[in-house]
Structures are given as structure tokens and as C-alpha cells.
Image 1 (cartoon, rainbow, N blue to C red):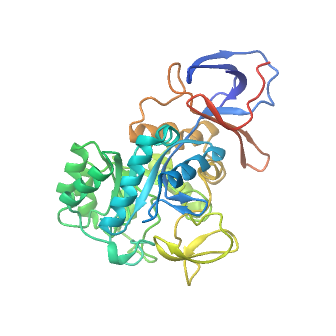
Image 2: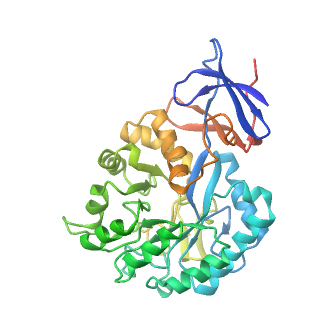
Length: 387
């Protein structure tokens, strides 16, 4: 496979060659090729809850439905992701995790797209606000024996756990997770400063969708947002879809954390894309799709229940909201999350799997995906010519 595109980091036109599914060459070519799409490492989204009417936290989840969700990400430039299971009963989570593991084992299209499972909950805050849309009835304190049984159901594929460190046993639990090779994120938390500090000392290294899953009104200082922003050992994931965080907050968070300690996630849910109305079949309980596409807890318009926009919107938005350059914005959605999750066979280098996204930047700052490559296979769109 061979084509000419512009590098995302330099804008330089290059002749790209792919052999046996891996990058085999990036040869500089003469201008003019200024109209060619940009080529970048494909997005790596650490938070995919569902898509197109399918939730991954679902007692009826099947291997075929898992494949449909992940293949649905192709047209949005996502080659790798962490399918995300949220707070539910033990049996409900075990079924979803077991189904994901079976999908990874049996379906090559799933296996090629998954870089680990994200378990968001159930060890989160029970308080309104920090709990977000997670059902209170299933929120519980960290339990190592339970986690091991869930990891067994997942056949060892749980790679990221989001929890609140407000529980007394949290530091020891975090230490065990990290020692077992699991990345630990702080999220959906009402923890005080000492608990945040203890969690980071124990090995927590990420903040899940910082600024969301929080109280509507916070103590001015200290509070768990300032604590996580100030902690240099924590990378922050942000939902920069234009709804979860106002532009000024995105800009402030990125300036505080720096682009090197910020990544983008989508947090898309299965309700995304459904017509406006109320839906009672979500694992989060009753949710509502508003006229503008936002997904909220039914009966109000402010508490969000996941996202409906995929990660390419976040890439464009951090450029508009925070003045981030194209190269840095791309890396916040690709190379940096891949590094966090330990995807060592991924990257824009000779010999790595050819996972790429091609896109055009529009005059209004938005971004249009033109093609997606997964392990050297064209899974969406059309590649530019080689001449």
C-alpha cells in the first residue's frame, strides 16, 4: 500500500508505504501537495462506553454487539480503544467483562482494536454529583477479592480502573492494582486532599475526565480539582466535546497540567446518536437525549450521562479553546494515551502497526476524517493517490 499525505507534526508531504500491516516508509516528496490530507497516528480512546444504541455495560451484551461498537469507531479515526464497563452489579459487570474477553479471543476485528478494558467503577463516591450518572445501588467500596474475580472474568484484560480514593482501604487497593499491571485513575471522587495524596503515593497516575463527575458547588479551596491539577504525577483526561467543559475551563486545565500531562477521551455512550427523547434501557438508568444531542440524566438538563461526540471533536476543540497546535492536539488523542495504556506496538515509526487517521482541517477549525487505517487495513474512507 502506498499514498502521499502530509505529516501531522511538520506538514511535510511524504510518500507513505505499508507492508504486512506495518509502516515501512515515510519518504519526503517535492511540493506541491498542499491539498493532501494530514496523516497522523490514529486516535486511542481510553473511554468508549457504547455506540449506536449498544451499551457495553449490558446484561444482554454479545460478541457481535461488541464488534459493532468498535467497528463503529472506524469512521471517527479511532484504531485503538479501551471498551469501558461502568458501575453495575457484580453479575452484570462479570457478564460484560466476560463477553468482552470472549470477543477479544474469538474476533480478530475486536482484538486488533482493543488495548485493554477500562473498568470505571463500581468503587466510586456514593455522593450526588461525584457519582455522576452511575447507579447508587451498585456503588461500593474497593474489594480486592471481587476485583480479582472480575479480572478473571475479563481473562486479564482489565488495564485501567477508575476509582475514588475516599475509602479507607483505597491506598492498599491501588498498590495491588498497580503491582498487577493495572493503570489507576482517580475519578467520580469526593476525596479530600490527604486521600488524593495517598492515592498518588500508592501509584494512581491518571485523572478520569477531570472536571466532570463532581459536585455542582465546591469549596473554594482546597478541593479535589485543585489537588489533581496541582499534582504533577497525574495526567488529566478531558472530555473536550464542547458540552462537558466550557472552553475557558479546558484552556485553564491544559495550561495548569500542560499539554504533556493532558490526554483526550470521548466518553461516548450507546445512547449517542439516538433521536431526542427519554430512554429507560441504559445501564445508567433513565436518560434523555436532548434536541442538541446531549445525553443527560432524565428529568433535568444539566447532569450529563456520557457524551455523544467522538474524539475528533476534542482534537479540534482544544486547538480552538486553548490555542494548542495541531501536532500537540493530535498527540493528546493518540501517542500520549497509547503510552499511558502501554500500547508498545503503536506509533508513527517504521515497523509499528500502521494505525493511522487521515483528515482535513476546515476553515472554521473543525476536522473531517477522510480515512482510517487499522493495522495497515483501510477500514474507512479513501486514501489519496501515490502521485
